[in-house]
Length: 470
Image (cartoon, rainbow, N blue to C red; front, side, top):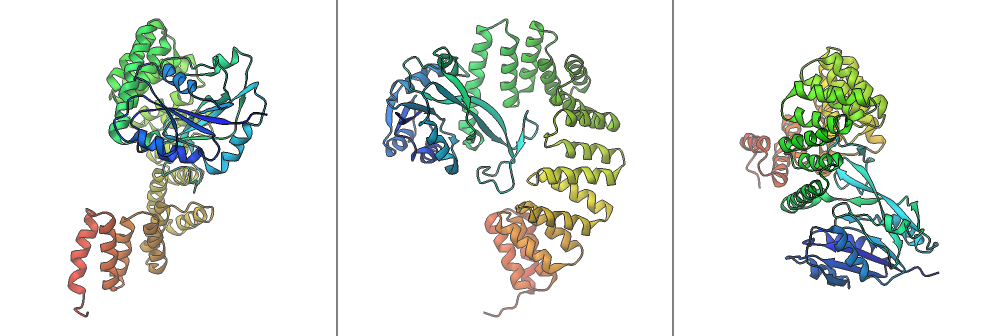
């Protein structure tokens, strides 16, 4: 059975991303088909270095038209669609290749892992400790789309902004199946100016969609979300209000309006919108969470705790639940219970630096340093070998004058990429009167972070203690 694969892409100014994307899949595709929409950098040179077939298409505001041009130049039996900031893990390539050996009466839908550090985003999933695909991000949120399909003449993308191909395939009797291979999306690794350019372009398209669909509340909710993405909370709130003019009982618009009003420091209006959203649809974990945040900022601790518990019951995988609960419970004066919650959050997501800081803060207040060390050692044994965990553990040893253990973990933290840990290591060595080694540690800190104020001060402090020996 015919099983060749064409990679189909549209690109513009992707010189920083394209090579890694192409390298991730080049071993399983038979041709690389790239449509460039007006690059002014070295994108085309990168594409040519992979022997790509290149088409040119004048940039338009119609993503489907550009996608369809990339399909036009594909000649293989199957088409696989990626963007330049997306990757496929090497271990998943055989499974992807195997799809092309199947029947041509189906297409495949993939889950995209959109990596982020924003744990408040809907459906956030924490990364597993040590996951090489995380690239420093704490987690991801999912989106799904058809990306792998037979090369049919009538296969066409539709939709100017959120372009999709599955409708044209289903009209031809093609079945949609789910593929377990994740697509790794690193949009936030782009340079700040490119990221902002992309956000502003989506805003423009969002306005066009709303203008073309003036009676569709969802168009204005999407526009509000795009404004929220760039931190323009005033225009986000205005967009959500426009959606509510069209559908006054739209629970999602009310929920997101409440979030925007909270960011605008208008808590009474935020609570009103969120409570109405919950009244319409009480099964929204994000609405309960947002209401809890507003109440916590007003120090209405018991009411906030109730909201957070309801959110957690609706979404047991909510990664910030235990940390939010811990803050509110500590505010209510129940410190031991609060520490138990922050520990639960840390064990659920060991890469969450905020949960780690909160847990250590609470355990220090309780005077339970040995117990905290036991918890962190357990996390390390289970694979949470991050610089932050090593550094926190080292500090706990240092507070009890357990200097050898402290040095061990400060060094591990530094080697894991935390320059400040070299400064901390130097402090221990200074306390042990090992001044030459302390000086070297402070200098290593400054090599990684030239403006670290502690290392600059400590280096000046240690110099008078150094001998003049060669």
